Image (cartoon, rainbow, N blue to C red):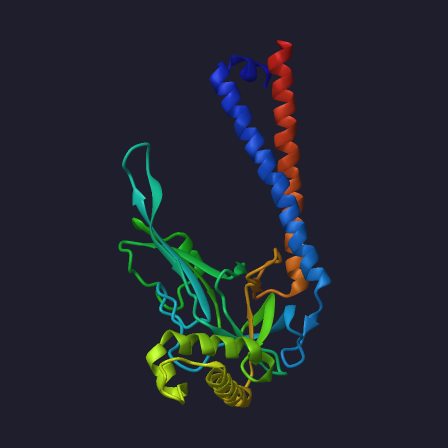
Amino acid sequence: MSAFVTSLSDNEFWLGMCGLVIVAAAGFYAIFRFLFRAQIIVDTPTSKVRSAAQGYVELRGRGALMDGPPITAPLSGLPCIWYRYTIEALNDAGGGPRWATMESGQSDDLFLLVDGSGECVVDPENAEVIQPYTERWRGNGPSCYIPAGRHWLANLFSVGRYRLTEMRMLPGEPLYAIGYFRNIGGCADAPNSAEEVRHLLSLWKRDRAALLKRFDANGDGEIDLDEWQAARDAAKQQVRKEQVEHAAQPSVHMIAHASHGTRPFLLSRHDPATLVRKYRMYAAAALLLFLLAGALLIESMGIRFSGV
């Protein structure tokens, strides 16, 4: 190693040192990222859908499709509750063959988590989906479907200038979710009366002609204090009516990514104990990467500046 380090030019040496610093920093960041996720899972007890409190919760059940058009994975054509796909083409231009991404995407359709006590709508937007069922195969076109029932070994040794990767979560399989839980509709989502009245009055004021026609009792072209009070009373009555109709609607449970805070929104087909083990293994690997990059950095600097 000494001969290699001393043979490098100054530009090559400092470029290598910058690379090691970046690798060490990435490893250091990954250690805390993975340990934070593991600890979040450990510290959050599993709740039932029916009795879960609004806020950050952990749910376990099975995935299911909602009523309506089914969710279909675009490459395999198989039914699923969530998918992500990538289409890559083999590019031979300049510097040897490499894979270039032609197209990618993922599902943002809602689906259900059912746990026996009830069902919860899952909004997968901004979710971190952990180790979904994954298939990768090659073909001669970007739209080549995977043959039904094809063995994974056949996918591994398939050939073609296009590489297609598809990740899926399937209906009926175990589903783990940890994220922000809330109830939509019903009494739990009732609007604030004072705010609703102010909002309604502001809408009425934008259409002055309609406001005068409805509340200008003396016809002087102005809304006096008594007439404005009548408008306020009418707005309160309309808000109360809307609140009664709103409360009569059934409440819908939903889990999604929180718009605030740093806690993650995780979805997986694995149980929480398995996820904790995986995250701790990832943290250990990140620690090893950090130590290795740091050791190489220190040793290389020592060799370079000691003249060895």
